[in-house]
Amino acid sequence: MRTSNILFSVVHLFVVLFIIAAGIFFIMLPSLSSFRVNLASLLTEGSAFFVKLGIAFLSFGFLLLTGFYFLNRKKYLKLKMGCGKTLIDEAIIKDYLKNYWQEVFPGQEVQSDIILHFPQKLEIIAQLPKIKEEEKDTLLARVQNELGVILARKLGYEKEFFLTIND
Image (cartoon, rainbow, N blue to C red):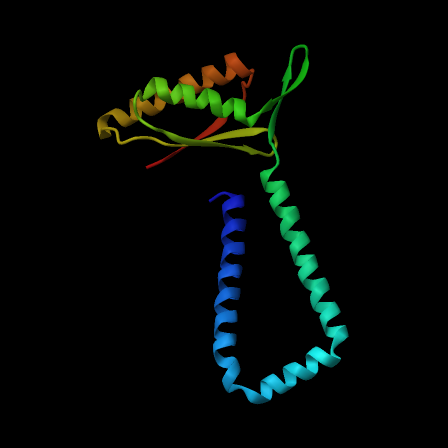
């Protein structure tokens, strides 16, 4: 699971739990008269408590915002070429992959994604359509070789890369 998916799942879990807790709180509020009295006195006298609570919520919000920014910013593959260095947007690599999968599996949709690992390692994740068991090994060898050629010729990426196939 990608880091962005994990963070999204954790945030989603906290929001769901908060909503459930708020629902339980409001259902039980009419039967808790002493709690309502204490809550009313806290609301009228506890200004320092609310400042601390506000700072905590604000800090947590900025932490989440920073996390989402770093997860969703553009990623580039940095390649050293004979004439210098170049940056390649991951959208370009995804476009080459999309065209390649259309050539290998015409008329079928192949879900694929790329991950740029530190330091400049490329991982291609693909969910291939159903193929016969006896054809898998030859197809995977073909895909690995052809993707290596595409990455080398079109982008100048000659390092090893990871190919992850999901069934």
